[in-house]
Image (cartoon, rainbow, N blue to C red; front, side, top):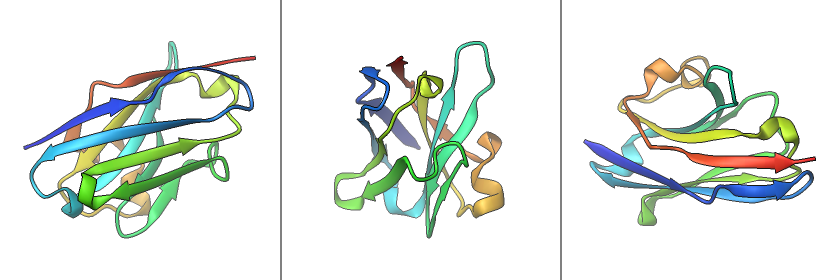
Length: 124
C-alpha cells in the first residue's frame, strides 16, 4: 500500500508560481511511476505530468510546469510557473504500481493510488 498526501495549493495571480508537493509513505517509493492530474470545475480529471524513467507532460503545461522527485524524502513535486486562470483546478497526486510509458502514463486508470488533492486557484 502507498499513502499519498498533497500540499502547496492556494490562490495565486496569473503569471505567478506555486510548487505542489506529494509525500508518499508505504511501499518502496522509487519503484513507482508518479503522476499529477487535475480536475477543473465541472470537467473531467486530466493528465498533467508524470515521472518514472522519464518525464511526461500534457501539452497545455509543457514549458511551464516541471515534475521532479526526491527519493530520499519520498516526495514528488510539481513546480508550476507562468500560471494561467485555466490552470485553476483540484490537483491530485497518483502512484502506479507498474512502470508507465508515455502512452500509459497519461491515463488515470493506470494509477493504483491517489491522494486527496489540493486546490489551485489562479486569478486573472
